[in-house]
Image 1 (cartoon, one colour):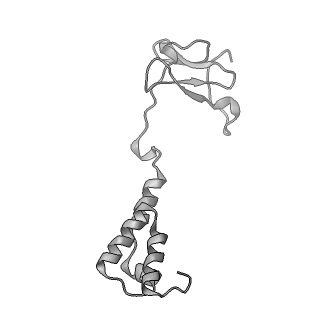
Image 2 (cartoon, helix red, strand yellow):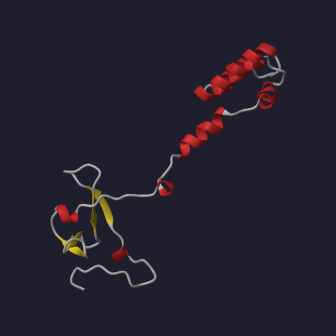
Image 3 (cartoon, one colour):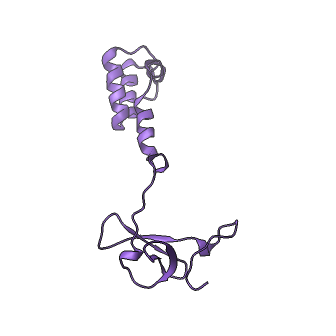
Length: 133
């Protein structure tokens, strides 16, 4: 084989995986390291790909580009949007009574800030609908 890279098997083995490390000199570029701790490089003006380079150089530095639909998206963003949405009916049921507009706004704001249960307990204690409040 002598350093030339090829992919001829159907299953992916550890020999066909690469560790991606950021290049210290140039931000936004990476080096691909093989299992044998050699670097993937381009030779002959990019026509030949090899996996036997020992040092970081221009030929071993890659800029990896990806289509937007494959980029990782934070799920926390979706969870926070779902957390913001709560219906008035759900708030009325949680409080045990019909709430006025100011109380609904206060509970929605508390839900976004993270102290929803404390505010709900205060509302329940005001109305004396909770024997534990």
